[in-house]
Image (cartoon, rainbow, N blue to C red; front, side, top):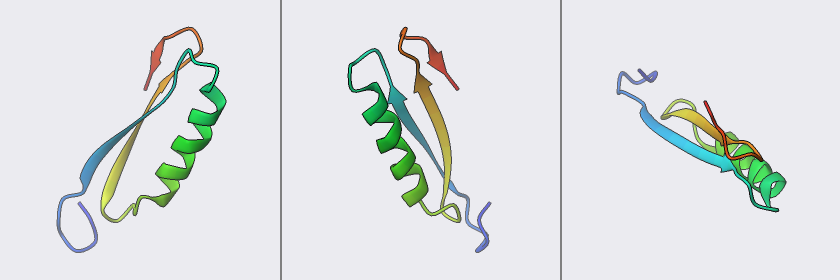
Length: 56
């Protein structure tokens, strides 16, 4: 619940993966998560490691 009494919107941010762009994805996800207003959004980070395993 946010400060104004409204329920926060839950947002999943998926990042990582087996690509050569793995590190870029981590940095991008971090930027996105920092930019989301915590009063409005509940962020659920969902990572994928370099071996393709999903992490929550």
